[in-house]
Image (cartoon, rainbow, N blue to C red):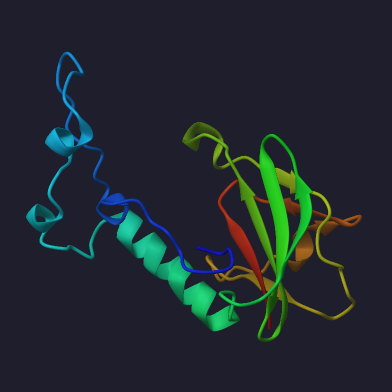
Length: 150
């Protein structure tokens, strides 16, 4: 959702559909696919709300057209910036399991800690300036973060 171009979301992701499973796993995907109409296109699932929130960030930052600069990629994390309508947007992602989601995550490099400049996570709306440490961003948790200046 935060990459350049048209976002691609797999069928049913926004509804939390996981597909039916046959006991012997001998049916093709079409026979296992849950029908989206049975959810009545609900806007209640957390997955729907999260994708809507990401789409809002994408739109408000103007991220669908800006150039991408990869800042760091490891086996477990990804940091990139996108040229946005109001300056560079920093995005911090990782592949941590839910069990570790509340533990801190170090991303290097991070945005500059300019004096007097406040920045907020565009997804949670929480201030993040105090987490900038020696050229890195020490996120308080492992949830995705996107920098937004205020």
